[in-house]
Amino acid sequence: MVWGWQIAWYLFLGGLGAGATLTSLVASRAGSRFGPIERAGAILAGPAVAFGTALLVLDLGMGRREPWRLIYLYSNWQSPMTWGTWILTLFIPIAVLHALSVTGAFAPRWERYVARVRRVCVRAHSALKVAAGVLALSTAIYTGVLLSVPPSFPLLSSWLLPVLFLVSALSTGLSAAVVVGHVKARRQRVELDLHPWSRIHIGLVVVELGVLLAWLAVGSASQAGSDSVQLLVSGALAPVFWVVVVVAGLVGPVLAFVVETATRGQSPRLALAGEAGVLAGGLALRYLVLLAAVPVLVGPAL
Amino acid sequence: MSTATKTDVRHQYALVVDTNKCIGCEACSVACRVENEVPDGHWRSRIVPPTSGGSKVPMKWSCMHCADAPCVQVCPTKATYRRPDGIVVIEAAKCVGCKYCIVACPYGARYFDEKAGLPDKCDLCVDRLDAGLEPACVQTCVGRALALADLAAPNDEAAARIRSGEARPLHPELGTKPSVYYVVGK
Image (cartoon, rainbow over the protein chains, first blue to last red):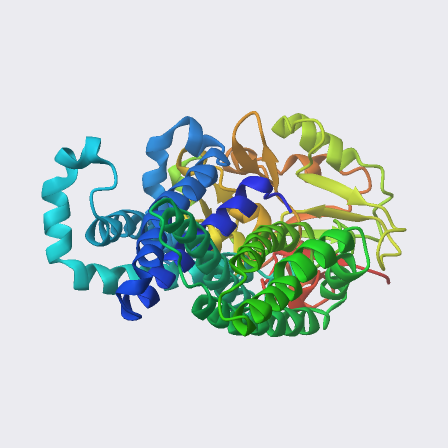
């Protein structure tokens, strides 16, 4: 696989930003007591996706040296990358405008520059929510579609990969929004009730475990796919897969969220540890998907 | 490449590899490297030794110039496209070097030239074709195992071997409709 760490981080941050936006939208429906989470999710999204996209551009060959060539990226409607280029181009500014519409003056020094834009955003709040939601979903799904369309890597050429990336995006975005929301609320001496989020997160992580298993099972059908699965579960990538993705990223967080929910929010530290695990697991998953990609024709051989 | 050939549908190129005549001498690989100035560590065309995979004979391996090429589908800039004469080429001036084509090629026929910031692969020596010459590998082949076929030419011998089914594509199950055909066994 010719794509390396830049792409892994991009896939992770794109998903995280998308999930953070969707978390923000859920929080906004759940009432004002989740204001810190709504704001944290909205603020995180734009910079996360923009940073990921910057990594993507840095990974380019001629496109980095001659950036005006990037305009060609919008041209092939058959290519998932063209779809992604359009989605990211729209999502990043919409995410920033959405953040402006839900946040107060968080940086007073800049406020006089953004005040007018913010007023427009606040007025267009409902429309921005719809646009941000649609684009966030598109981003989360697209990162998986990008890898699943080519026939060259059987483990990746599966409709379950976009599903896995979508669920993982929701999960990592939720974690990021909860961690940042918690820290910000703490600073304002507000104790956030995390256990409703832990409860949602239990569901998400259980679904992700199921999709992960289904994806591996379906992937095993072909020779190269089964070689990929071997690499993950018992080969060179197994330590990272089991320790970071499965234990730290899925099983551990579920246990932490269950305890957190059972104690009705008395163990926020445990919940936060779970969120950190989800983030580490989400990043490791993106790396491993790229690293475990065994080509359909093993090497150049017949 | 000349624009005359770009719109030229009088040709429909394919490559026929007669493995019965191939001695695995790599002369084609060397001619290709020299002709196309392929950087060290990469190849446009190579001989896959008979011991690898299920192959019992040496196989020349390069871009398959697929009619349904995944690289053409995924290229976001349309820098990679298939000419009307069947050759899949890269228009360097349009390419951003995203490497999606390399990811997408199931035959592993593309490489990334870090220095140029661009992907590269076999283009059947289009410049030579446009000048009325054969591809470097075909011209060099010691045992005459390689032949450029023109499926649009009625009396083309190599094309006849494709039409008769004597020469067959590799891994047609991938569904990309390759244009490199192999004669295996007699």
